[in-house]
Length: 380
Image (cartoon, rainbow, N blue to C red; front, side, top):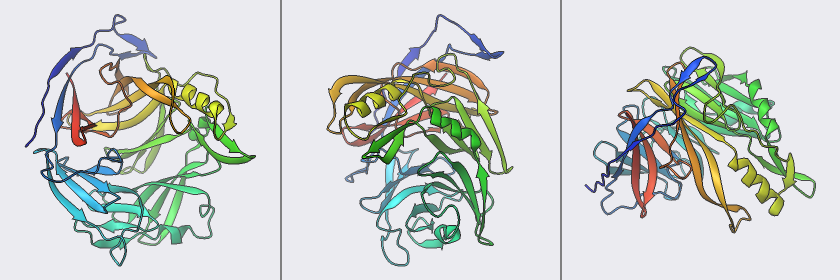
C-alpha cells in the first residue's frame, strides 16, 4: 500500500482571544494538525475528473463509493486500508440500466445506490435495479412539471418508501422540499420562504433580452446526522430539516471572522459574456461564500468551511478571472448548531473540494499527480 504520511503540527493563536457574539463565547484559539494519505489503486486508474463530486460514504464510514459517469462504474475504496476494493460495472441501457447520463449518485441508509437522471431509482451494489422511483409521473400535470431543477434524492431513515428532494424553479427563487411516498404514490411540499433573501445578492445574466442564468444565489444541500441542511451561500444562515422528527427550523449566526452575510454592492444584471460579467463574478467570489455542513459523529460537532476567493488579473479561456488562491475559514458548531469556534486556516489556500469526516478527522480530497489522496485535518 502506498501511504504518504506527513505530519505538520500547527498552532493558531489569534491576538483577539475569545470574542463574544450575541452572548455566546466563540473560541478563536484553535490548534490543529494535518497529515496526508494516498489510496493504492494498484494497476487501475481512479476517476478523479469530477473531483469526487458524485461520491458518497457508506453508513459505517468504511468505504467511499465514487461514481465514474464516463465508464458507468462504481469505484469502491476502503478508507481504512486505503485501497481500491472493486470497480462495479453498471448497465446504461436495458432493464437494469441507469441511463446514458446520470445527474448524480448517493447511497441509501442501507448502502444501496440512488441514481437520478432521466431514470430515477435504487440499485444494489451489483448493478441490479431494485425499484424505479416514478417521480416524473407523479409530477405530471402539477405546478412542478416545468422549469424545476431536481437536486439530490434522499431516502428518509427507517421509511423505505419515502424520499425527499430539494427543488428550485429555474426562473425564480422559489425553493422547496418535495417528500414522496411511493407506498401510495403521493407527495407533499414544504415551503422554504427564507431562501427568497438570496435575491439580494443574485446576479442574472442576459443575452439579447433573454435570461441565460444567474449566479451568487445558491443553497448548498448536505445530508448529515439524519438531517437535511440547506446552507445559504451569501448569508450565514441555514434551514435544517430533521428527517426522523419531520421538523423544519431555521438558524442564523454571526461569526467573529466570517460575519453574518455578504456586504458588497453587486450589480443585479450583467451580460452573459464579456468583461462586465467577469468583473461581477470576481467581486461576488471575493466576498465571503459560506459552505455546506459536515457532521463529526465521534466528537458530536458540525464543521463548515467558508471561502473568500483571490483572483489574478489573468483571464481564462471562458472570459473569467483566474483564481489564484483563497482565504479559508473553519466554523465549528455543537450538535444543536450553536457556533462554538471559528478560525482562519491559512494552510488551505484553495476552495476545499469534496470533504467529509471519518474517525474524528476532516478528510479533504486532493489530486496528487493524478492519484487519489486526502489531506486530513485534526482539530486538537
